[in-house]
Length: 159
Image 1 (cartoon, rainbow, N blue to C red):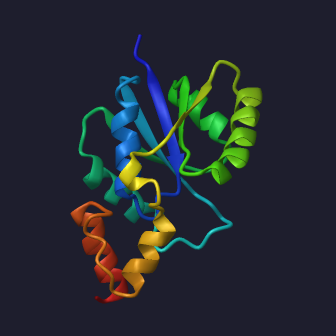
Image 2: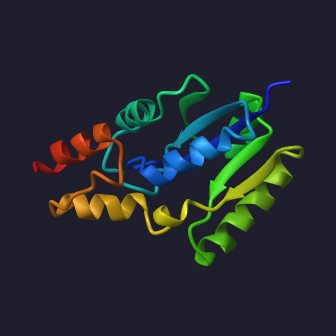
């Protein structure tokens, strides 16, 4: 039986921290679906299509599939035939929100488990919003993102 995990997020943009969690999820799942969320409450820097394309370039693994979704994550996970949701925890402050979401997803999709992964030590501080801020002001993000993402950020900010 193929074990499928879903790693949801807005990925605006995907960072080396996200890439780390995807690679590590592949150690316990046969396939990982990176689920790019349509979040009407956020104004993303990159369009949904751009985010999907950047994730595809950054991951480039046949065991990783990138899809967009809107609506309930539990519905997406069930439709994808997945049994795992992967979430990252950078700090204790992330836990309360993630814990609530995991319990709600378990209620909506019994049999689907949420797995929390802690990022690699050197990537713990990293977030998409921090990367956007550094790039906006012309800072070097080359160690924080895939080269294709770095290029896209430079184009967005004209640097």
